[in-house]
Image (cartoon, rainbow, N blue to C red; front, side, top):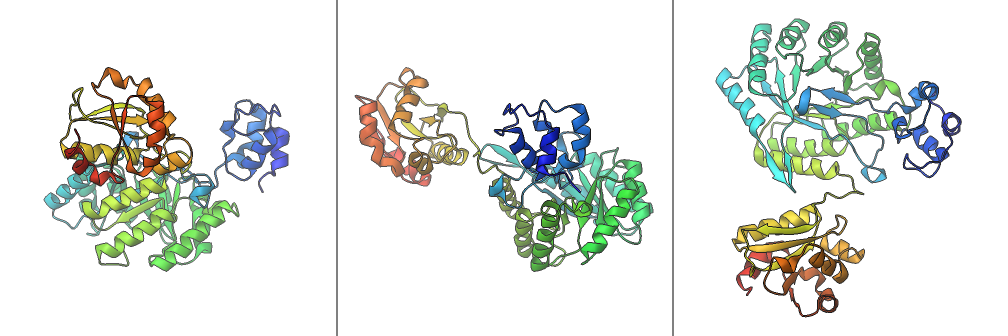
Length: 448
């Protein structure tokens, strides 16, 4: 049984230094008991106390790493049921399943397509995390050959899918020690699969269909065999079933501190559906609740992109919006007489505005004011994007040293601040631009 907050407090330094981010050591101890912080946040805890607090500081869901190097995928280690309680830390890995029954050139082309897929959103490059290779042929030599071919093409991590331990062993020999996820240990083969996970230092998925008690027992058996990095597959595939079971697993790990089920979860949203559309809908559900690894049967950039965007949104700290650096940005090589537009440093706002300005072909200056990462309306309502802030930004970034006029275009959503801005910037013409970024190109055609 874990220690209570008061028991943990007795082992803390009791300095109330606040360096952990909490006002008192007692508050930190309570959060540690609730598995909502890590012991490493306290810089002054003694080595003796660390040993006694080890169990209390272990995350309720184990952090599991798939792959190695810069491309590795880390899943698990979550501490809350709902994103707004704190944040989600480790986004689920998205893998595309390929079978070793494909013609080898077709297989290699698919590997390259997954490897090379990349899209930029709010300044961040998004892509698929890796591939899952299935031993659909049932032949160990073929499986090993295809795994070797994939490893020669990409550095991203693998999920290896096979029920036969011999085939799995041959395939693992081709992965150069890159720690793929082994799928899967069952009641029939767990000893052999656990031995392979230990031998190759790779994480292991365990599967027990429809019975969480059996899943917990199997996970404990695998752990007793020396495997620490475990991923769970409860066997559910239908939308309602996966929602219920994945929520139960998350609650058992976080609320009940039930260690045998305190691991990330792998899901296969395409196994119960033939249509790509249904698979994407279920994958979106799994991203939100509560998959750690998602294996897709289809790869279509048009379908992958919304999943990547959803994942990015959900796994962005709601208390720390994605921001760009405030400053004066050049778009389309502006000259001193080019238009000057202003907006906030919320990434989505910046890239929406900058993208429309760039698409217009009109050379322009874009002044980004520090609104603490808030959008235009939110920043204005919070007093973070107002006339004083804009005027301060004009002076801070030496706008008059770059342009030859005194005209500034403010977003149409905050037209009410135009009078105040005239007072803050005497002699300037305050122009009210469009309410929506999509209308900026049309607006710029009339600017003079």
